[in-house]
Length: 72
Image 1 (cartoon, rainbow, N blue to C red):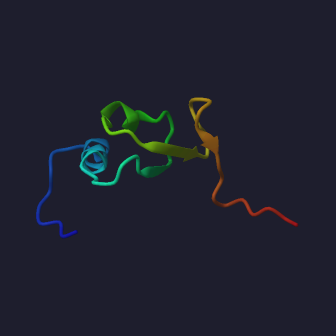
Image 2 (cartoon, helix red, strand yellow; image 1 turned 90 degrees about the vertical axis):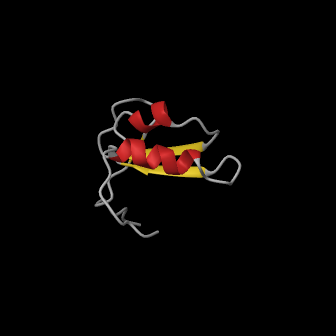
Image 3 (spheres, rainbow, N blue to C red; image 1 turned 90 degrees about the horizontal axis):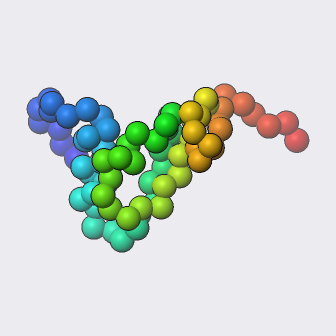
């Protein structure tokens, strides 16, 4: 992808536009830093959504701290 100019869209609008235009049927979308899954309100395509956040604001988002290393 070559970015040739700034756009007026928010990052959510831009990302949902890219997702909605994917050719793949039901793509898996990983959302890191999902908070409240705001991006879902702009996605019209059928997707398999996987959301993660350090401090999720809704129960459907997985809590994940990327700095935490599990000790065996």
